[in-house]
Length: 143
Image (cartoon, rainbow, N blue to C red; front, side, top):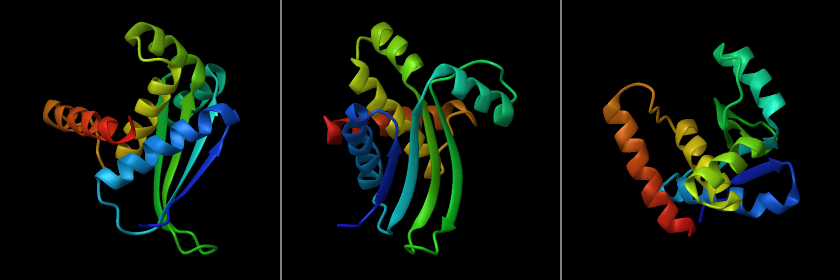
């Protein structure tokens, strides 16, 4: 088994769910090199600021991912990037989709991990379909 580093900042009660989902995405994609992903669980205010700064969209969103793909000189792992999740938006979506907050956080974490691995649903309808199918398969791993 590959030793991945999933570093999560935010409320402790969400960490195990997010880590489980990110690791499931890495497992599903057969990521056979050691990698590192940083995750921050935040609120709508902070994610809106980041969304405006990096995507020129002045509104909150559920999740952002920032790809890096650099080697961390301290541990030799490939830094895939950073994930930021708004727990406020995740909570609203969990009520809308009836997934439960933990389920929605896991869905968003897996979604963002796929982005860090190179998938992008905003390119085409086909890529959107592929990413959605992968997320369904990943959910089978972490459920």
